[in-house]
Image (spheres, rainbow, N blue to C red):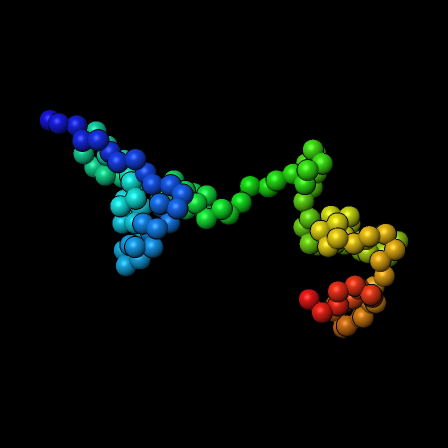
Length: 128
């Protein structure tokens, strides 16, 4: 029995272009057509959807892994949740202020709603 060579899976722009051409096929069929399958000893084809989807994510340039902010240390990531402290204060951490590009001395106007608090920067780019 002759052993068939499996095609090399497509990557990058070549993968994106091929997937766009195959827009009428199912995900599994697209993965197979792009070379994301293996043939078992028994001759059964198995489509590797995880490798296919990961290759698509990479080809599109989407970064899913967390990256350091260049300071060489990990630390916690912002959760976008805070709790009232024992003294009644709400503390907005530096992860949020640095992400917004805020500097020491920036001022905000506080507006209270029934169940929310709005902060609007005074003198900043108010219309974004």
